[in-house]
Image 1 (spheres, one colour):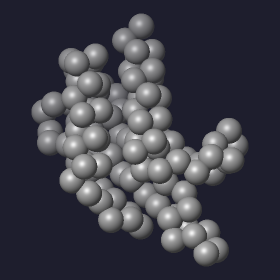
Image 2 (image 1 turned 30 degrees about the vertical axis):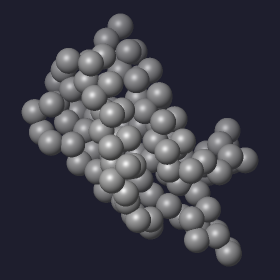
Image 3 (image 1 turned 90 degrees about the vertical axis):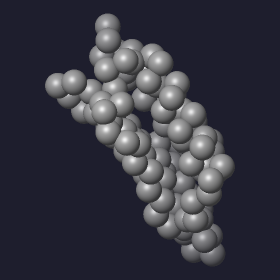
Amino acid sequence: MDRPLEIAFHGLQGSLALEQDIRDHVDKLEKHCKGLVSCRVTVEASGGKGQPHGHVSVHIMLGLPGRDLAVSHDPHHEKNRRSHPDAYTAVRDAFRVAERQMQDVKA
């Protein structure tokens, strides 16, 4: 990548282990798409009543030559409404979507 990876946490305490997990996912994406210019990952927790961290959302912005891709894993989305993933699961799911979108761009 031309620019350093950006990782931000909102509403939850980040950890070195979670940051490394994100870095590993980005490394995998870079192997599949040599043109990756930048990547910004935001992990966000929002709690409901009595839930300090009820839902974890992950937003990924990928910079590619000539275009950007935005990927989100949001538990409030209809198909995810019943799931309450932890941060690692939400990151994994978001990066799976990112990988599929990058393959579509290459096709």
